[in-house]
Length: 82
Image (cartoon, rainbow, N blue to C red; front, top):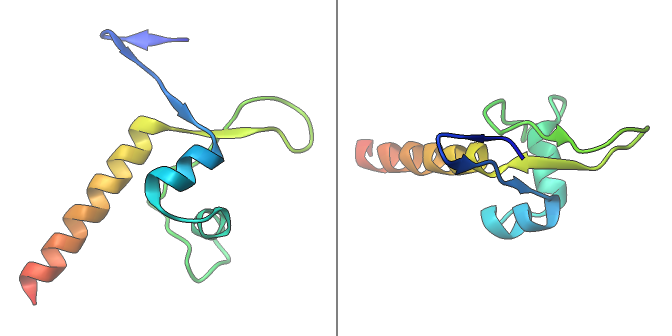
């Protein structure tokens, strides 16, 4: 696994991602689907972990952590503006 500045990249598979962010699999796929009313262009894109027609996917934990932080900041700023 590639490392940079002594930090390891960590990949979350979908089951671990659902636990970490509290959304179900279908809600995650909705955020990735540009045709969905729940589409979120800021949601981290998955990475392919293999080949074939339907390769396994994972998400970089650092990108997910950044997305969570942005959601918290967005929510906090909306509350403080009310």
